Amino acid sequence: MGAAPADNAVHGSRGAADTIAQSLVEAIRSGDILDDQPLPTERELCDRFDASRPTVREALAQLQLRGYVSGGQGRRPRATRPSLASILRGAGDHLREVLGDNESAAHLEQMRHFIETGAAREAATRADTIRIAKLRDTLDRNFEAIGTPAFPTTDIAFHRALVAVLGNPVILTLHDMFVSDMLAKRPHLNDRLSHDQIVYEEHRQIYQAILDSNPQIATDVMDRHLARSYRSRLAAPQSLAPDPLNRG
Image (cartoon, one colour):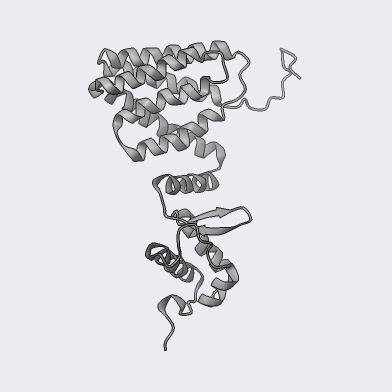
């Protein structure tokens, strides 16, 4: 009996990796490899496909990027079904690897700017009473958290409620992944209370413009809000000049 197509020897680095990856994807889709079941070991895959270890590793990397593998960092890869979040998270990780932290952060910030100014405009144009009520609820919690460690969480919640107005699951998933990560990694604040008050007041102005059905003001305030937020999160460059405040 001839060997099954998945067990045929494959040669050539890139083509072999593609073939191995696709074979494993089909096995996961068909249920031959169950969800959360460990994948065959690298040695087993090398023997099965007559491939080198680097080729097998490239195939496994493809599976991870496509959302069919979980694990890593020393743990044996396990089969999983891809989700929108896992696919976008893998793409985000690769973006950081390709562009570097600073450049990728700038691109992600630009994406955030585009999404949230558009969301503010759309909310002011067509948000229904339920969406407005949800946005008001997040605004009230944002106010109550001023000056406390809970403020960043309520900050994220306000922006998420605004983006949810678009009703687009892809955009909302991107927001949950990238924006939450960016806001959670904001630098230490010397004057948290003042910072929180500024942020809340900008949120309030955005909400009021949406309530007044004024897309121009909503967009303008959001544009200024995001620009100020991004600048405030940039790390100060190294300086050779003495610090006039004697901060070390």
